[in-house]
Picture: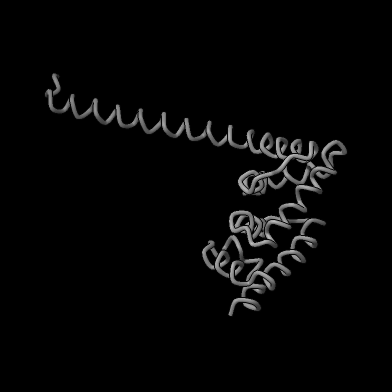
Length: 164
């Protein structure tokens, strides 16, 4: 049985489209793996610069702040490692300082950290973010309201206290 030329052409287009979709999805999956690997490298680079007394840009700070639970585990592991603990403490202080100064990019990532901050880091984090919500309420409220409410749900009380 011979297929019509139109049917054959349509079948080839559908197959090409499906192949393109699978290739795209495969590349995205590989990119996600590479990004996960590079997050640790980015933090290591920032920690090394801090050790060497070099300046850290706001963009470097933003990239060093974890964006998800996996990154947070990597991030906080630097505090447990004796070789990076001092630099990690400096990095953490710098993130808090820039957030308190109202650096919007840094503060946005710092606010989003509320979603997965845990353990002994959580107590200090919530103390600092409370201070920021009071002292930089305009910026805090602007950033808070622009975020997905699920991601900042742990800061709802601070928003209600300082933004209404």
